Length: 303
Image (cartoon, rainbow, N blue to C red; front, side, top):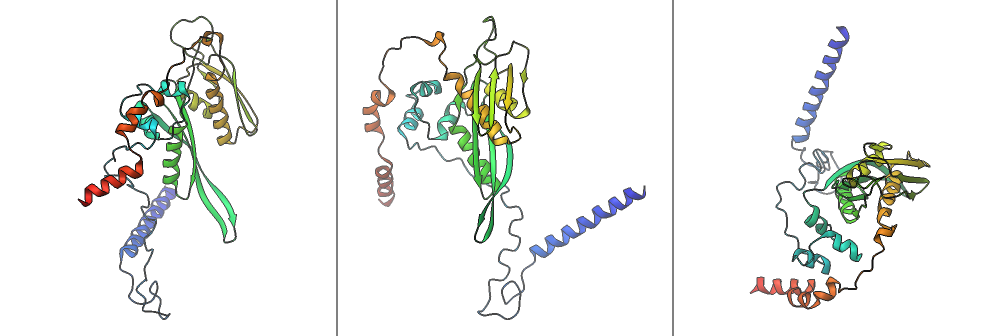
């Protein structure tokens, strides 16, 4: 009972201190001098600069703002927005680089789920001392055959997470799924043994029978679940305590599921026109370069 009373007394004391700090932070700074100090050069007026700075920093950032309409800046983005490209797999089939994360949102927006796997501080030694930044690792997928991994470093945690989510969208790749034995039901595991390597970590994915589940550590299990793989054996070597390399090795192994061409993919494909060739006239007539379009809008606004 005595220890409980002491604990309650400590909590009350901490709350009183916090309330006093809030009152002091909200109070107006004393006039004259820099930060309320007497003397010094100049007329002052800069006192209190930075008071309360950092309290609530980053909270509610972006809330209440209306989402801006997507204005594509690449030919691929324009074709996607205008409905000329119907499926995301068509883009992967043509090996077009996706440079706008809005393209992924257009096709997979509501199905995508992201998970912040780790936020870690990293430091750089400079002349002025150590510069600390925050590194965010984000995994993203729809559990239906698409997965991505994003890593971003920034001075603020919120900025790092936002950048990692954007990079995870840009790095989303298709996941090929297969069977362990008889081809009964829907594909549930990796089609063959695949290996990914990052740093000292070597990650190997092995097909497993239906009902096995994902036999792995928590980090690759999260990525495999987001990729839509239900059953899989794994084998990892190296410094798996390094989460970034462990996640990247798993991502590269998943990416290789479509790199290995099995005999059932040995089909003769007819050479057809790419969307850039097919809709070249459409793009020329309906979409102008960004500089010309901006100049035209400015002229219309001035008129």
